[in-house]
Image (cartoon, rainbow, N blue to C red):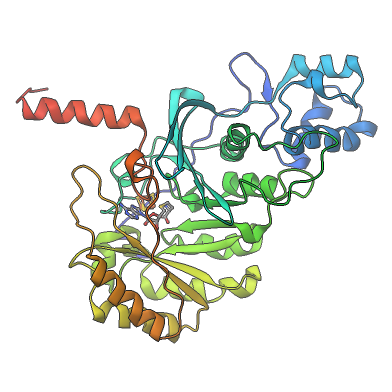
Length: 395
Ligand code: SAH
Ligand code: SF4
């Protein structure tokens, strides 16, 4: 580890007890749910069964009110309601793009806000969720990177984003109705605000809940975690989550990657590639997605494309390269590569035998595209500052 760029892992958690003294059951693992039920008066002998029942009501049926848990005795339901709540982030605004993309601004404890994006496609619907408010990292092309880390999201707030979207899409099954095979929300990508591997435990617990077969029950192959390259946590992700992995690669030399993805100063390209090489085997997944943002004149040359292939081949990594046309945001220091350049770059990769899809930009009209997320309050604050600066106001 190089001492050059100390990057701390801020683990800021908020207590599970809510202000009014009630405990939120969302986001607890099955074991934690069982423990908390026992601690609050459920007889130990019944705890396993009650855990299973309550779990199903919350995650399979989307129920938020204990009174609706009809397979529990009335007195027990009342007892639960006195001690617990089933709480998820509150939707503050919802914007729908011309292309059907939905962007939600959600309020979480402490008055903070996170953005969640739903992207409908022909054969799937992907929910892009956030893992932190802001980010400790400062990737120079990313809008979220200009916002300081406020705090890590709890497991409840992470899986709560999925539950919130299912509410909005009206996708909770109705008791007795046949199971819907074609889900509106079929995939999750951890590609919203924040670095998921700097909030490992909460992300893991939330994704475990999303995968649980007696609940939301999404396959681990339909969940993709994107990281900027927190090398020590990559092996843990394979072992403890087992979802698909995407890596924000973005540059083929350390010199350029140090600038674009500054965590590279701590774990460089070589160290990163080594960690990636063992991921597919350990997690039993097919291939890793290399994300590569196309920045005009910065990382988009033919030489870059060849170097990228070289890195992947040298380490024998099963890979797909996802080219992302840069999404501009106010004050961004880069420009998007031309379509011709992106196509030429994609072609070199394709000729080398790797899939090289160019990511379609979605929801641009509502600032919902990759790297454009930033909470509205933060945007408002920034623009006030800018206005003051322009007017020459001194603080
Ligand atoms: N922190 C994680 C996940 C969130 S970012 C990570 O960095 O991987 C999700 C993806 O969007 C990353 O690949 C990121 O590099 C990319 N991205 C960020 N800003 C972007 C922008 N302005 N245009 C296009 N892609 C961007
Ligand atoms: Fe953080 Fe990812 Fe943006 Fe980098 S690209 S600043 S890691 S959210």
